[in-house]
Image (tube, rainbow, N blue to C red; front, side):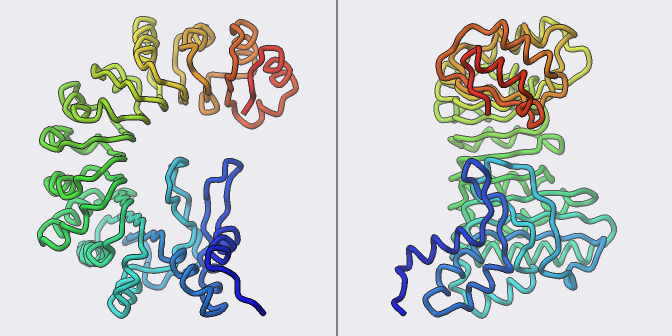
Length: 381
């Protein structure tokens, strides 16, 4: 039987072991399948092994004995639809197992491209300390990591991340291993986090939880970000510093409306905005400011609104006030936008060439919405 080219084998592995959505993005990785593919033949081993090690997801918690957990446990997806390395549902390794594997076969560390670590500790300091050392050792042995996600699921998770940051930056070799990281997601811990950020100067995509710390650490870090996601609302002065070097490079932004109103820097390349408008009794004046802020971005083409908490009767006027340069408007996550609101919006919307509307699934399947979009010349996604 003639052998297949390596490129064809790799493509087959990607199709069999990955589940994709209608936009072609990988939404799930089947690690048990990848393990079996590694055993097919010598020709299949290299591409299957690369896919197996490419994304590693580790979770540490003192609520169960993680070392005895099955490799086929069901793990919930993390909410990051645009992630280039989506987290798997069934991780192939436990931390100590992976570390032993890399010690025996150091060359495998270069295959790890994305690492997600979630900490959840409530009482067990010994387990927390062990997890911190294990993860720090793993990162040291994986020089090819370009996407690093450090997450807290509760309890002392943020403290553990801060301690992990200290482990990573105490030794020069470990610190050097972070220089290739381009995509970082983290929650704020304490003093260790600024050192962690300083050790990763190539960051281009940053997701940061502000609720646990201060943005003042960014004042000395010249990040030139293309993607920025913020949870929480930083003071205006810290926001100015964060965007000081990124105003000319930022393309994708995910913030709440309070943070949006604090942005004074021009963002000429910003093309995608995910905006959370949430709060009690948002005044009309604030709504007008939000509309003006959105209109301030000349290259904006994609707008994703969440929790559109505008005054009663103000949803349709708000939507009609959005820039006519938008190509896609996503309102699928807005609880206040029902079928009647969408029908009224489409009725009053001026004709636009190439404009698309994203609504929630049940609304999309309704004949009324489909016919209204057809009359308005709007594509329904």
